[in-house]
Length: 438
Image 1: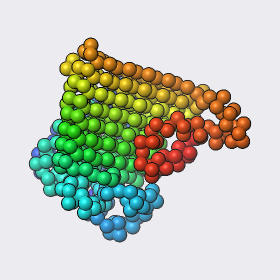
Image 2: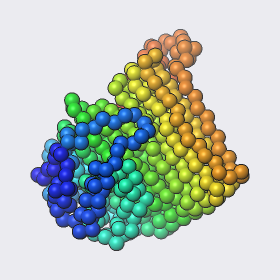
Image 3: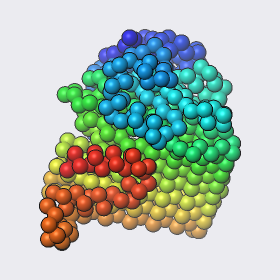
Image 4: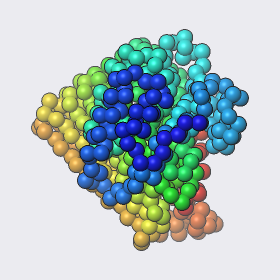
C-alpha cells in the first residue's frame, strides 16, 4: 500500500508522480499547480470554507493494478461495491464500468462491442500512459489548473478518474458508468475525468459517489472536462450521496460545437458543503446545453449548487431546471450564471428554480447572474419558493394516507421532472435515498 498523508508539500507532490511513474511534464505540471494552490485563497462567493488541509490523506493506493474481473479484486473492496449494488447494476444495465476506491481505480471492464467500435474507456492514469498524445491534447485545456484553489489542488494531486474517447459516427446504446468511493477517515479524493464525444457520436455516462460517515472531515475536489463535437450528444448523469462529513468542491465543464448537445443530470443528496455548478460553453452555431438538477439539504448541510451556460455562438439554446429541498435546518440554494454574448445572436435561455422548504429553520436562496449582450436573444428566469401545501396534505390524508406518507408523495411529485430523466435503476435508488432523509 502507498500512502501520502498530512501536510502536503512539494516533496509529497513529487512522490505521487514518482509512484505513478509519470512523464516529467506531468511532474512539472503538478508542482506548478501546487504552487498556485498555496498562493490562491478560497472562493469569495458561496458558503465560507474552513478547511484544515493538513488533515487529509492525499493519495492512497490499495492495489497494484486495475482488475477486469470482480473475482480478482480484494475481497473487502469487492464486498463494499457489492453492498452498494454496483456489481449487480453492471450485469443488468451497463456496457462498461470503472470503480475507484480511495485514490485509484481498482476495477474496470469494457464489453467487446466498445472495443469493436474503437471506443477508449479507461481510467485517466492509464490514458496518460497508453494514449499520451490524445491525453495531452485535451488535459487542462477546458478547466485550467489556476482557475481556483481547488482546480489547483486537483492539478497537484489528481489521481484516477475516467477517460473516454468516442470516435466519429459512433453510437453507444447503453450507459457507461464510473463509481467513486471514499472509504477512509480524512481521505481526499481528486479524480480527473476527460470525455471526448467526437463528431456525430453519442454517449451517456453515469457517475455515482458515496462515503461512510466519520466524525472528521474528508475532501472531494474533482475536475471534469467534456468535449462535444459537431452534431454530437453527451449526457452526464450524477447521483452523489457523500456522507455529511465530506466537502464536495467540484469543477465540471463542457464545450459544445455546432449543433451539438450537452445534458447535465445532476443529483446532490449528501455532503457537508457542496459547491458544484456544471457548465456548458456553447461554442458552435446551434449548440444546446441543458442542466436538470436536484439538491437536498438537511441538518448541518449546505447545498450551494446550480449551473452555468455561456452562449458564444448564434442560434444557441440553454435550459436550466433546478429543484431544491431544504429540511431540518439545511440550506439548499441555487447559484448560476447565464451569459449570452454579443456574437450569440438569436439565442434562447430559460432558467426555472423551484424550492420546497419543509420547516421554519431551513433556508434557500436563489442567486442568479444573467447577462444578455445582444438585442435578438431571449432569456427567461422563473423562481419559486414554497412550503408543503396544507391543502394538499389535507386532501391526501382525507384519503386515508398518513401525514408522513403524504409528505413523501408530495416531495416525490416535486422531483418528477428530475427523476424522469434518470435510468430506472437510478430513479429507484434516488427514491430510496430520499425516503431515508425525510
